[in-house]
Image (cartoon, rainbow, N blue to C red; front, side, top):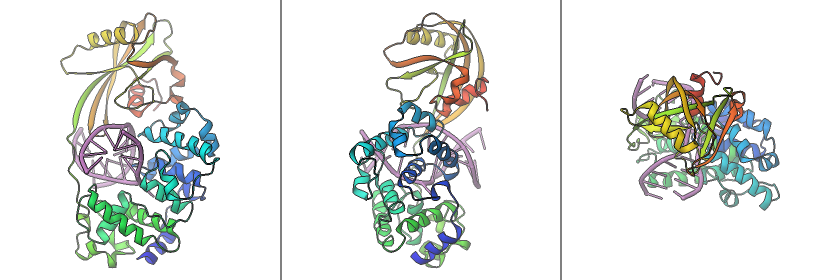
Length: 354
DNA sequence: TACGCGTGGAG
DNA sequence: TCTCCAAGCGT
């Protein structure tokens, strides 16, 4: 099985930017970006990020704000803050040399069991296993293991299998081959067993029901929210817009947001915005017009945002709930550390290009 | 151990 | 338009 998979990987692996070399730093960046994120989404972010932060040192000495601005739109922003912190830690504790073993890697912020195994095996050829969503699927099918994909007992068994399988030559390629198989052939739905190099020994395939493995876990209930978003422009400077940071935001720690309020359907728009702007920013609402709505999902939340373009007056003074607030030129919005959640609203108001 | 974190592609 | 879920992690 090991031999077949390695051969298949050599013949059919996708050419990906982080496979051009075995530089531990670029492997690390790619592995963090790929957490819970598909390859096609990551590629342009990876290219842009590596161009701006080509070495660990470049990343370590950058500001968190700038690192986040290069992560803007990729999601799970905590990853970027830990990666940045991790780079600084490697710089200080290991003189800029990324550790080559699982144990030390795992102690770096943002690096868990999976990522420590991935870096140790891919960048340093250590026989260290990896278990991600792909590996759980591939191995639970190959060995016809019972249990759902988030269940502790199943995951533990998969780690044991992966640990045994990774022993031997080319551990990094073998780990990547397992994941590549999961991503391209051994898919959640409609697996392509006809082209699978290990189908002959796959127990789920022999039972003719590979897509029954692993079982899908119970899912949380979806919550629906409505949100008013304020695009505030000063009366005398209409080319600027207000961005804010809460001290303890529910989402998007460290990123800029547009001022907003979560509302009930019956709430009066103008009244809510007027009171909110006065209380939080000491601003007077002079006039408003609707600029469009958009939907966005965040984990198990489905949020409908309603944007309003507002003209505001008065002197900016922020409430203690907020850490910062600033008016920025509209032309600089593209370089700000904003979540896509806010970019959608800005695009609809034609303050950002599509 | 369970939960929450972002986003976009596929079906 | 909706659901599902991806190269996980820290708490």
